[in-house]
Image (cartoon, rainbow, N blue to C red; front, top):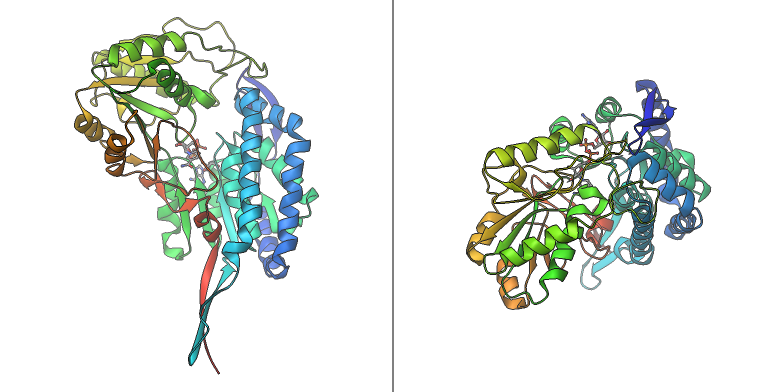
Length: 455
Ligand code: NAD
């Protein structure tokens, strides 16, 4: 048994029964037995199931949003946004899968005709994170099911109630139980999945766990994808016109989902000519954020999801201050139960500090002054991660020059912390490899077969 805790109060919501080695093995075998039958259905039938799931996310959104907020603490308005975002992604898959999964004729004339077909991988393991359980979940299990795979879905132990709701809605949408199974538990349950002969491992989570999983399953020679953490930089050039608006956008990128986004803005660099104005505006706007009960629709910032993360963040702040950083916000303690923390804005930071190098995954931000674009680009790339990088400027050509040098899966011009269903979502370096979303994220769950046809 493990307890699901409400991070806004520290109180138990309920106890859940963890899966065991036996139950995980049993689930795997049932997924294996059902896979060929699921793949043999016409694509349209699988799409219809996922289309009903898409509808249920709308009709049941009130209960789903409240459940998500209760177990991981994101403001309820953001839980509604997440459900809306998940539906956008599912719609993309519903509208585009047929095109990318259909057979392709390469040569139809001459002695040998050639074509490519796309076949499912088989049974895949989807080990998932808690910060956006719907978004990172649908990125994987929706195209996997559409492609004819069966799925063993392991929600994070911090989003298990949501994981169980996802399973129940899929069943009500017509996906047979032996084509989608949720396994409940934490690290040990995840480990049990790594011992089973899955045909693909799709992981969303931290670099540390991703690296461990990659090492554990490497010898299987099956497809693996890793969507991992980030330390995403944002650079403000000196030619931006509306500095308040840029500060507002950057602040949202820092604190949305309480900073617990893989593509949250984690470092800010500002050209020296606009640095003071930017910092003042950023701090001022930060002081106006509403912190409190995540069930209240007026709340901007709820509790952190995990108690342990408070110590990690406090350590980053302490380390930065010891090395000379100035703390502008978040000094006064909060009189709230639960895992609350005020956002912390630090200036006078540099890359000797943990806050500028290690993933924070919380509402703590360092803002560093830079001389020019060269210095900004060098600092932005001084990281082990490579998820996203953002540039704010009124001059596209100047921004593009810098964006081309970014070794990241995504670059943003005058926006940040966003994901589009039509574009591949992928990391480089310690942010992982493989991509979800876009047509690449449809093809990620099938394997090509080459046909050479004579006669
Ligand atoms: P985590 O690595 O702690 O856990 C992720 C999942 O792995 C959970 O389901 C967990 O139970 C499981 N797990 C833990 N140890 C395991 C093991 N030894 N074997 C198998 N499974 C194991 O990550 P988290 O705290 O859930 O998520 C936060 C991290 O995820 C952050 O680093 C964030 O940046 C990253 N993330 C990345 C993306 C992306 O798209 N790149 C999206 C969301 C989150």
